[in-house]
Each structure stands twice: as C-alpha cells, then as structure tokens.
Length: 251
Image (cartoon, rainbow, N blue to C red; front, side):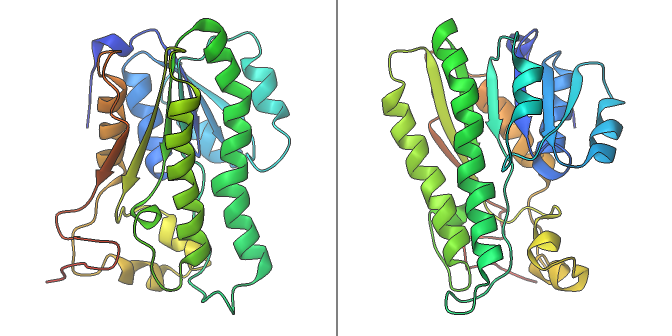
C-alpha cells in the first residue's frame, strides 16, 4: 500500500525495530516518500533484505538495549528529522507471581530503557536544529491493563506517560512528540510473546480481522505529514472487531 506525502520528501528518519512488522512497513513507506531512513534492528539478514528495497534505507545492526555505538556512529553527522521508537514487545503472559525475571526485565529493557536511551541520543540533535518529530509506539495495553500482562502493560503505560511529559519538556523547541496506541496487530508480536509457538500466536487473531502492520504504519505517516502547527499527540488505532484491550468480537 503506497502512501505518498510530498512534505516528507528529503527528511531523515530513525526507525527502531525496523526488521519486521510495523517497523518494516513504516521503513518501506518512508523510503517510498524519499525519506532517508536509518533502519535499526538486531537481525542483519532481515535488514539487508530490507535495504535492498531502496537506496533510501540504511541498515543499522543495533540492539537498543545495548550500548548504542553503531547507531551513534551512523548518525553522528546527520540531521535527524524523525524518530520512531518502535522496538519493543511482550514476553509471555505470566501472572506477576510466576513471571520469570529474564522476561519481565527484558520487557522493561526493550520497551522503556532502550526507548529512553535512543531518544536521549537523538532529541538533543533536534533541540539544536530547532525541529523534529518523535513518535513512540505504545499499545492499547498501556491504556487498559489486563491479567497476565502486568509488566508489559506497565511498560507501555510508562511509554504513554513519558510521551505526555516529553510534550511538556520540549514545548517551544519546535519538536512534536506523539504516541500511537495500536490494538491487535497481526505481526510477529504474538509469536515472540509465546516463545515461537505459532499455534498459540494464531489463536490470538482467530476468527477476527486484526490490524495489519501497514495499517499502523500508514497512520504514523499521516501523523508525520500534518502541518507543523498540528500535533496529533495521542492516536489510538483499533481493529473494528476490537472494542477494548480484552473485548474482541469473533465470528
């Protein structure tokens, strides 16, 4: 699905979690709009395949939970107009009393710590140049918690409140801060959540029509394309078959 927006042409973006799902779709759409995209992810093979799509895509093999040397070196002399903090995910659906430390800590590192560190690397550049757009990818889970998702929901709630606080921190500096909160999106999200169990992952989307990665990506492009005096501070995007974090109509 093409989404061509003239006022994005010539801009430079950093997209984390770019090797699959929403991040991959967004990277492709931005590249189609002649945006130079630093595509950040851990999986080199996926990034190389993505970079082959367009000369506008520059692959950066970088785990956002580690030292950000590869990303820092790549953008050292670059103006960054757009940052999309998309990397993250859920690990398991354990109740709090049963959640293994490596899983709950992993969610905090991916969804919160990595997001903060990438932002602290790029936002000072935006302040210096007097402009920029930051979009954090949240979740309906950050608005409506559910059993078995306490740490994931909590981490996404933190993304929500950080986004709102950053809007205040950066007021008057020419920087828009936005958050998009998707409901069910059929990507690798549930496969990762259930440790590669594709059957369990498929049941999440069984007998309903979820969002697709490109649906969310297209809405992020639309958010970025608004005139500079317009800030879509918070957008919630849901499948028509989903009414809340826990209410899904299945036929």
